[in-house]
Picture 1 (spheres, rainbow over the protein chains, first blue to last red):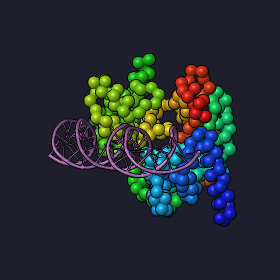
Picture 2 (picture 1 turned 45 degrees about the vertical axis):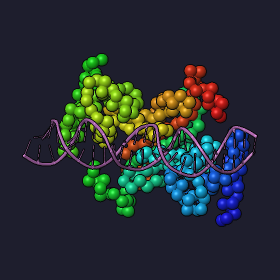
Picture 3 (picture 1 turned 180 degrees about the horizontal axis):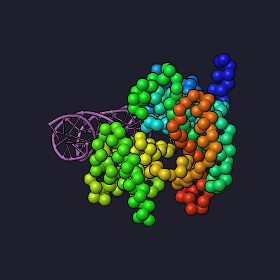
Picture 4 (picture 1 turned 135 degrees about the vertical axis):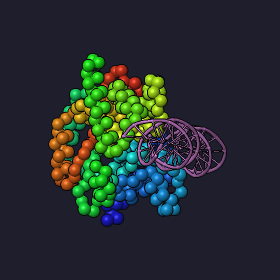
Length: 160
Length: 160
DNA sequence: ATAACTGCAAAACATTTGCATACAG
DNA sequence: CTGTATGCAAATGTTTTGCAGTTAT
């Protein structure tokens, strides 16, 4: 398992390094520390969570640098940024992951991922109709999971 | 044109009034003023724009009431709330409008609307697979419009 | 060398909240 | 009457910014 992880780590390092070089920006240890933390994380996380993880792993970075680096990583497609219902943005590592969309439980906020090839077709059709160069999309479905284990189940049944 | 507008106004008033009554909440003039302002607005707007419009129309409401009422209107489906890239939420009147999705130009932030029946099929399939009761979705496509008139066109061509 | 980056703390920003007052039911 | 809604201003929480000091190139 360290095999694959190491391979991926080198791969994303190279991508980020090339990206920075191409833009004449500096390859600082902080930036690579953020990149590593992102790829060590699984699933979705927010900027502050990442900041805390970094502090815990005896890496000294400021929040500003975390935000700044996450933006750079979005620009080179190594990270995807999402805005679900709240005001806080969520991020996730994006390299070599299948393009997926999100299903969100309005009661417990649990996230599920799905993928449907028809979305790609729709995207191409819309690009054609509107003469757009479409770069990415976000599809969120909101509802209620029917699991017994779903918290707030009763609360929402009163509410609606 | 006043015919239809008046008809719609009465219709949404009735829906909102019933909704409030059903929940034991009060029908205040401020709430109906916000509702009217929403339906006088065209396209997307944010909470503060609506607040300013209301002040300009010699209606005295506070920002807090605007936010509060917009939430109520979302709950009874008279208003749809969207989060595009920014931190600010956008709203739009929702009554009797076709369900549509959004295409956003990353250069000029212009919004276009589209609709594809396959999205409904995908929604039903996802609901079935995950055993979810899906209430709504949001599909946003991001890209660049190829119009000559698009502002920031040059800026973005430098950037990427 | 030198321009870009970092950390820090303050600022900015949209949204929410607490509380005293007003008012719909 | 009574509890709900309002306005105001202060609080909140995330993200951005300005600036002095650091550092990659």
